[in-house]
Image 1 (tube, rainbow over the protein chains, first blue to last red):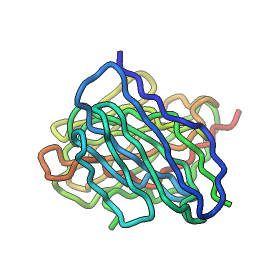
Image 2 (cartoon, helix red, strand yellow):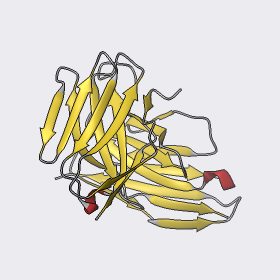
Image 3 (cartoon, each protein chain N blue to C red):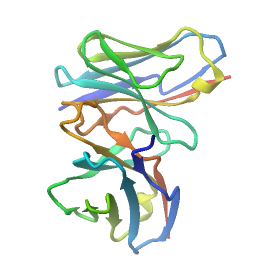
Image 4 (tube, rainbow over the protein chains, first blue to last red):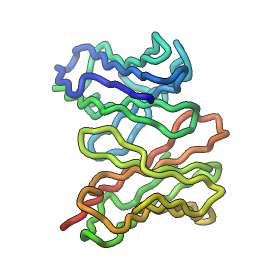
Length: 112
Length: 114
């Protein structure tokens, strides 16, 4: 069966510090991978998606970047965090585009 | 622009009664609709889906209704249980569109009281 792992579960970082969140999927190959953010009082906002290694599409201009160094690994990064980057970050995968998503357990990021 | 809208941010229902969560969409190309349930500090979990070729799909206590002409869908939970208290997200996609991801609403927080 397929599983998705996301870590860390919580993170407190000072403004201006770097960020690296990692997500891995097991039990499937060539998944579509996604990073979402749920900010307080808002819905699920798609940040990045990837249909293959090295292929990243960004949905919104922002202070973050994503990379997919391996087929089942997706990384969310920032060189310098802003206060507005605080939120609940979710990694997800799907078999194909526009299909059902399977979410990781999320990372609660607090930028202070 | 929000293509999937959940206009009720919260809903409170008594245990044993029916919960009805509503969702509207604007993109007539959407042909696949899903509901997700999310507990605090956890990732959303898939609940139920419906294709545009159907107008109803049922799974145990959960039923999703689709009204394509009104661009409206709803999730019915009968009977509601305290464990159903969570945020529910509606999502939609156009499977043959050039987009690659589901479009989510902002969620409705359901509270089922004993």
